[in-house]
Amino acid sequence: MSGNGTTWNLSGKKAFVCDLDGTLFMGQNPIESAVRFVIDNTKSGRFKFFYLTNNTSKCPEEYLKKIAGASIPVTENQILTPLITLEAYIREKGYRSVYLIAGEKVKAHMAERLSDAGVSLDYDPEANELIALTYDKELTYDKLAKATGLWNMRNVPPSPMCPIRTKNQTPVDFVATHPDNCCPSERGPIPDIGGMMKFLETTNGMRPSHVFGKPSPTLLAPVLAQFAPEEVAVVGDRLYTDKAIADNAGVDFVCVLSGETTREDLAAYRGTPPAIVVETFDRVETSCGVKETA
Ligand SMILES: [Mg+2]
Image (cartoon, rainbow, N blue to C red):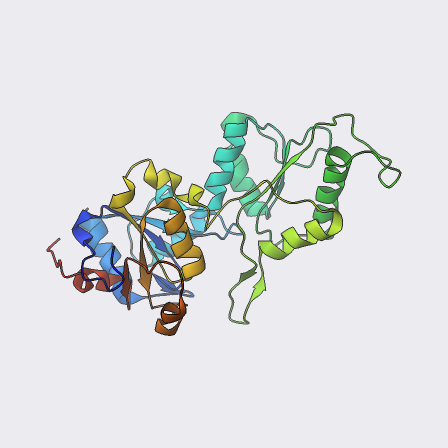
């Protein structure tokens, strides 16, 4: 690896895991040269591309539409969202009853994904084995009160403060799909799942056993099942999420300057430098000096 990009070898790579906003898109608009690079190299089969997002307020199909809308050939198994990690977690644990806190579309998506496993995703205080929190843009007080009440009745020792107990006294598990405190918007930062977790923790101290999504490397499991770590690079514009997931998974990080990170941020950054820094993703081709024909 090299901080100045002179020795980074593109030809050893087989797969790129791409962040979306700031890397391939700016809001709704594609970053043309980066998108062109992805289209050309997808069509030639030179590299495999995966698309990474922490946002669990949307279904993978919505990202599929956005990416395909920029003329990039893409299928659903190239979209990496913490909803995939959540599904894998539920299957691995063998849970059959989950209180899923999610918007209606996401809940319907998860119900479809888990339909073969006979998993209920509704609130059921006697049966629920897991509380799963997503970035629920349809969050209500009732959902938060059910989650904390369920936790109190199952995970807190009996007390006069909580006279109602469930017959089932097996502690309920709690996970969150990602850690983001805020979601960028044209109006500046707006609430994401981080505040929802704080809301719950402030109420009765409940904290998730697992938080999926960037920077947890679990999100890259489907990629690392197909490629060796040295064949993979994460491409993104945020050091504290995109670079962190690359570091945690032991793969190279390509830092693009088309989004949030600036050269000033890089100069002040105290961690290991990115494998390569480029203005836009397509520049990875020329910056490492191994220009090849597709
Ligand atoms: Mg980004």
